[in-house]
Image 1 (cartoon, protein in one colour):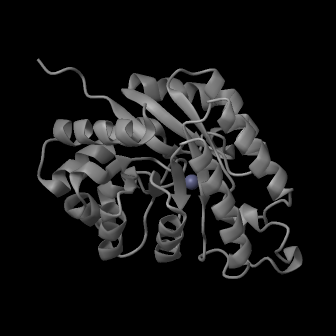
Image 2 (tube, helix red, strand yellow; image 1 turned 90 degrees about the vertical axis):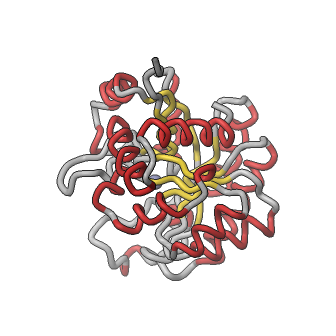
Length: 271
Ligand SMILES: [Zn+2]
């Protein structure tokens, strides 16, 4: 008899208006769905602190604190000329926040550093400042022997180059949107790539699940986004659906896929 497979979510945003008031119930649904570990990612000072509080209440939630690349340049952007339908990020002292993440990492409470990285999709300028913050957070991660969880939208190759320059050994590229060839390069450099449940209806993620080395694949949700259903909120309890789709793409059983991912997660995050 095989034991019930266990699942992991390498990247979730349970601190988000979409989960307001339902954070604890969502964590409980995740546990009931067999999720051993859900990494809850912070983005800026407010969510970083809320992530810590939430994770202290649940055994299956582990905190990762970071600075999202768009938040990293909140002090640089021209707020009056912000072109997007969502509000521009609130300015804060990025160096004080990097120091805070460093302090919390020193206590052993964090499972990783992130979300951090580069974004050339929502913003195309201030890349030097984005890189400065990414490098500083990678140094924090290295100092405490923690993995980094990376956002790399439209800046995948540059992020990979920075990690190599810095000698970062442990990293997860979340929701990788670059070419398959580059994804393979990321895996061959020893880094991991986490795939969200949207893989159920997303051909590029299916190709990644089929072609990447099995020992470099992880699961994530990026919830409330990237869900299996076109409408509706994504959540950690949907990871098993993503695993089924990944296994189908690869031509292996769902149990074998879940087992491989669980082992990969333990190798990278030590949990
Ligand atoms: Zn994210």
